[in-house]
Image (cartoon, rainbow, N blue to C red; front, side, top):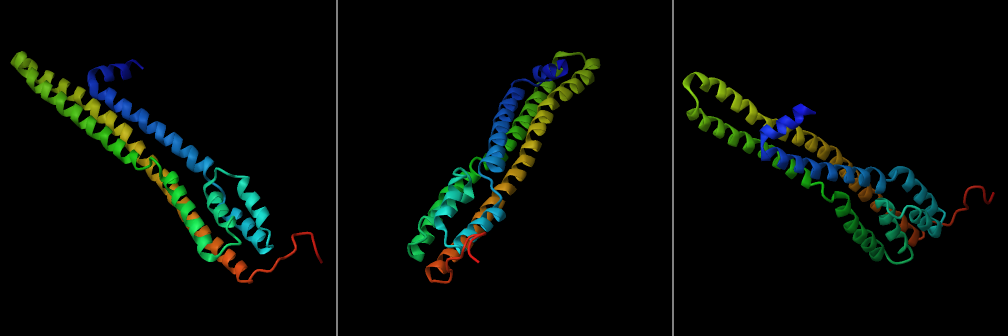
Amino acid sequence: MDAIVESFRLGGIWMYIILAVSVASLAIIIERAVVLYFKYNVGASAFMAQIQKLIMQNNIDRAIKLCNSAPEKALPRVVKAGLTRANKNELEIGNAVEETTIEVVPEIQKRLSNLPVLANVATLMGLLGTIVGMIEAFNGLGAVSADKRQEVLSSGISLAMYATAFGLLVAIPCLLAHVMLNNKARQMVVEIDQASVRLQNLLISRLRGGIQAQPADGQGG
C-alpha cells in the first residue's frame, strides 16, 4: 500500500486523472455487464421455441403473457410488439416489430463506445505525464553537479514512467472489457433480428390461414 501511495505522489496530478478515468470505466463496465448478462438477456432459442409453440396453437394471449413475464428483457419486448398486432395486417406487424427494435437496440449498445475512448484517454494521460516528468528531469540537471547528473536523470526518468505504467494498467482491462461486452451486445442484436424475422413469418402465415388452431399439450386426442 505504501508503494502505491508513493507512486501516486511521485507520478503527480496525472496519476489522479488516470484514477478518475479508471473509476468511470469501471462504473460503465459493471453497469453494462449487469444489463447485458442479466437485465436484458434471455435464452433466445428456448424463448422463441415457446413463442412458436403458442402461435402454432393459435394462443396469442398466452404468448403475450409469456412476454409480460419478462418485461425488462430485450427480446420479449420486441416479440410482444409483434404479438399485440397479430390480428392486424402484415405491414402493421412489421412496423411494430421494427419500431420496438429501433428502441431496444440503442439501449443494448448504450455507453459501450465510451470504453475505447476512456482507454485512449488513460493511455494518453500516462504518456503526457511521462513526457512532462522527463522534461522536469532534464531541466533539473542544471541544478546538480556533473557527477550527480547521471543519478538524477535515471531517477527522474524512472519516476516519470509511473504515469505511463498506470495508464496502461487502466487501458488494457478497459479494452478487453469492451471487446467482451460489445460481442455480447452484438449477439443480442443478432438474436433479436433473427427472432423478428421468425416471428413475422409465423404471424403472417397465421393471417393467411397457414396455421390452424392446434390443441395444447395434454388436450384433445
